[in-house]
Length: 432
Image 1 (cartoon, rainbow, N blue to C red):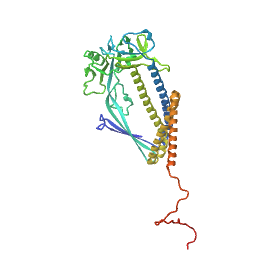
Image 2: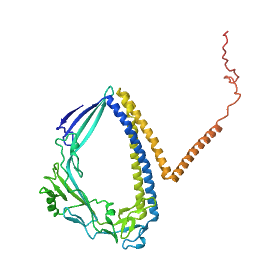
Image 3: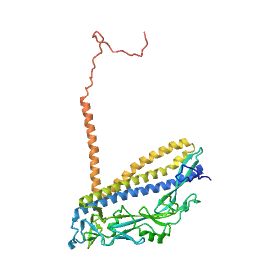
Image 4: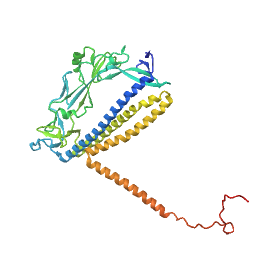
């Protein structure tokens, strides 16, 4: 059951185009969803466990391959190719050249660069939704969802047929001319051919202005509405006031710049070098860099990726535990206040379960992929625990030796004159 409140004059929306939808769920429907949540949560926990385990193996293999490569790499001159280095892991650094320019044949121009990148965007509708859920006495709930429609440039088609409100929010099809990269044929690093794979690992971030001659090709592709604007091609009436369906095309380039490559020498070009564990190494960076620094950058990137995937695995596992326990909150939501308390407790339990299970999975993965490191870590941990216990025992023994011994025959109490006084007698007999 739902009701729709369309408000095209809402000035709080980015495009003044928004409406809300209210929907309700009974307590029984939420119970059914809770059982589904148990299954989904368990599957998410299992997936998170596999991700954490796989990530440790990926990190270990990558680190081992980079360490092996750092010990096997040899630096060779860029100006000549030595057949004796065929198949070896080589480090080559120097200036680049491109006898043939990178060319965008669709628009009929070229750039004296290693790579030319074309980005095609269309002005489209975008749907965003924001939901708020309120619990009702008896276990039901009401969800109010606000849909906001805004306009933005996007380089991929946004499927407006999936919008909650399609009327007035239809996106046309993307143009036939798509985003694309163009590498310079026969680009070289000294005497070595770079190849598309090596060039593809580098970003082209320098803006490149299309020549005026591209306007004719643009009109041939898009019609008379195409024009050169802001260094690119614009298809529409006014670049300062875009309309839905307008298209803009922009280019960036990777200029001829010194490069450093660590790869397998394959005849006169480069290919990935395979370590003993099967991992491939192909490192490319701008500038003239020492191979040790390039391998260090590779290890740094591996560590960053490892922690990103660990965080993702932890988040997935927490959500899995929380969703799996949502049924308890639904049952208690007959009285919303009690349900909120149960929900907070379920979140805490989910966090504790995550912080307990995830380290165990990572530790097992270390035992599987890095047994020597894991054994050393366990030995160090056991030694620390033993050392802390022994230190605590010694401190306790020292405190016991410093404390004065208790007297077996305490001296009798004295009065103000120094005479001994007898301790009070507490009898239970009759009073005289």
